[in-house]
Length: 495
Image (cartoon, one colour):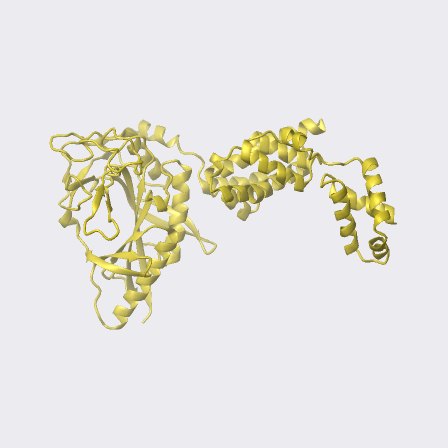
C-alpha cells in the first residue's frame, strides 16, 4: 500500500541572552565547571520568586515577526508539570494557551519550488538541566548550568511531506535565526534541538493516524536519517495489518534505529495552569513596532538584492547569504574596492564593466581562497583578522596588476595570520609584480636562447610548448611577472 508521510516539527532554540530566563545567572550552558552558574531561583528552592527576562521576550517576538507570525498584545506564562531528574522544580515554566507568537509561516525552496510551511505557534519557556551518564557507572549526574536557559519553541503545522523537506526547512530556519541574531543555533552544542512528529496514512485518506515523536537528533543529517527510518518502520507495521500507537522514540545514531522510550503524554497529563509568580504580559502596538525595527535584512531579501544590484547569479548570491557576516563582508569590500580603483585610475567614477569585474573577482576570492583559510582554521568570518578595507586593497592591487594571483595568495595568507596591510606585506616579501616590458624583454630573450627546442616546437604549431616557456620566465622572475604579458611577449619575439 502507498502511504503519505506527515511530519511536524517542534524546534527548541536557546536564546542568546546575557542572563537566564528567570534569574540573573549568566546564560552559559557550558562553563568550565558543572553547576557553576546556578542560584536558588534556577535550582527551584522554596520561597524564591522568578522574574521575566525582557531580552528573551523581545528576541522571541522578533523571531515571530521574521516568520510572519501573528503577535498578540497579551501573553502569559504557565506551569507545565512533569517529573524528571534534570527539572529541579518538578515543573517547567512554559506557555500554554497564550504564547508570545501565534500562527505564521516560512517559505522554503524545495526542489526548485517554493513551499509555504505553516507555523502553529512560537512560545517561550525555560530549559531543563542536563543528565550526565559516566561510562561504566551505575548512577547518573545532573548539571544544572543549563537549567532556566531561555528556550524558544517553534512548532510547525504537519505540512512537511518527506524527511528531506524537514531537513531543508530546519537549515533555512537556522539561517534566519542566525541572521537576526537571536541564537547561534548550533545543533552540536544543543542550541538548536528538534523533535519530529511523524505519521503515515494511506494515500487519499484525510484522517491522521497515531504519531511518533522522535527525539535525540543532534544534526540535520540525523533528523533526515531518523525520519527515513521511521517512515520505513511505520510502513512495515501498517503493511503487517497491525496498529500504530502514539509514542516517544529516541534516535540511536550508532545503531541507525529508533527505540521506544515511553508512550506519548497528552496535554492533560501536564496539568497546565497559569504561573502565580509571574504577571501576565501586555504590549502596545508602538512597542511591537519598535522591536520590529531591530530586524536586519533577511536572507531571501538580501539574496534577491545581490542578484539585482551586483549582477550575481542566484547560486552565487545564495552562497554569500549563507551567513550574515559573509554577505556584509562582501558588500563592504565592494564599496571599499570601488574607492581604491578610483584612486589608482584617477577617475571620478568606476565604469560598469570595471565594477562588474571587481564584483566577480571579489566573489571568487572570498568564496575560494578566503573560505579555504577559514575552513582550515575552523573559524568563522567574524573571527577573521582580515578587515574589509585590507581585503579591498588586495583586490585593487590584483586588478591593477600590482601583484599576480600566485603572489596574492601568499599575501592573503599573511593577512589572514596577522591582519597585516597587503601593501606592507608585498613590500616586505618583495612580491610586487613585474609589468615593465623593457625589464621582461631581457628575461624572455634569455629564456628563448636557453630553450631552442620548445621555440622550434612553437614555430611548428605546438602551442603547448608556449606554456613551458612562460613557466621558465616565471621561474626567472620568482613568480613576480605578469603571466599574460609574458605570454604576449613570447608570441611577439618568436614570430
